[in-house]
Amino acid sequence: MTEHLVDPAVPRDLHAFIAGLPKAELHVHHVGSASPRIVSELAARHPDSKVPTDPEALVDYFTFTDFAHFIEVYLSVVDLIRTPEDVRLLTYEVARDMARQQVRYAELTITPFSSTRRGIDEGAFMAAIEDARKAAEAEFGTVLRWCFDIPGEAGLESAEETTRLATDDRLRPEGLVSFGLGGPEIGVARPQFKPYFDRAIAAGLHSVPHAGETTGPQTVWDALTDLRAERIGHGTSSAQDPALLAHLAERRIPLEVCPTSNIATRAVRTLDEHPIKEFVNAGVLVTVNSDDPPMFGTDLNNEYAVAARLLGLDERGLADLAKNAVEASFLDAPGKSRIRDEIDTYTAAWLAS
Ligand SMILES: O=C(O)c1cccc(C(=O)CC[C@H]2O[C@@H](n3cnc4c(=O)[nH]cnc43)[C@H](O)[C@@H]2O)c1
Ligand SMILES: [Zn+2]
Image (cartoon, rainbow, N blue to C red; front, side):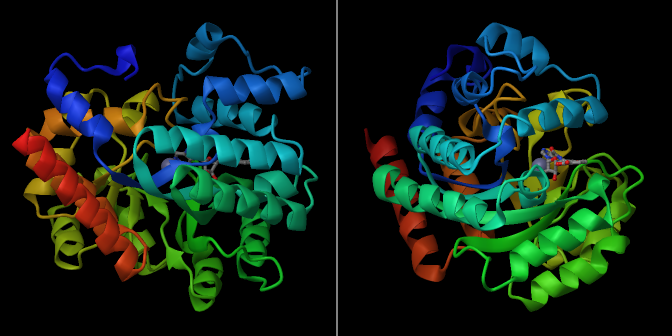
């Protein structure tokens, strides 16, 4: 366990339980998962980069004044990924870090536009992520699936390119299950992306846009109505609208909650002010996720510890939280059953010991 991530308000044995708990993660970004180890390796390949390689300097570099600053730093890490081999390394090593946390299944959000516009060949990009996915499953036992997201701030050109890459049968990777929308929300209205989501949904992809992370509940309504969202990335501001919470609960539309991310980007002031408990009390299906873990100084295990504290969860409560992510995932029924059974077996053995 990483010592700086041990929350003193959470008993040590609950941290240990979380560390071994089989988990699924539904909201985690590809480039945003590059650990200091991975960043160092990429920076060594591309020494002209301004991204620091020293882990201590990286902590400062990954301290954000607001969401816009976060995106600026994020893009400097994107600039480290220049070749298909960089893409493969990043993807494979991210899976290794997930496996260490007992992540059995992850839907990883990838922004292919950022790579293709920087000159990486689109076919080689798809081959690199697929090669890493297959190797990770065989070697680490972690099943990866992809969400391709539009970087909204990059405009409709990026929406067109992302939709093309996600729906062209000659390119579309086998692991692709969903279609997203990320980046800043302020000034980037959701409805303009409706035609692109319509095409992606028609091609069989699930709709999972970010909404309500840095803007109000209307953005979540827009994501539901115009983008036909099946899950909401963050959805934090839903707490301001009781009718929206009731709608999410009634339709079983899960929220992908990322508590530490919301503090790091200053979308929420403190963890104690985070509305996760309001979501649970309203009957919303809550999943807990790490978003851009090294950039936000967290990992998935820490997010479960945060949830344990904010929601007052014991081992059974944490197992139910892990099962929420399985239920909300786009895994097939046998895949869901397998992870649920593993969670139950692990929890029963832990409680019996
Ligand atoms: O690649 C480019 O050239 C480019 C140009 C303009 C804007 C962008 C982006 O906005 C990239 C943003 C990208 O950010 C990702 N992301 C990562 N973490 C979060 C998050 O916590 N909330 C929202 N978005 C996030 C996401 O994958 C975006 O697509 C790129
Ligand atoms: Zn995100």
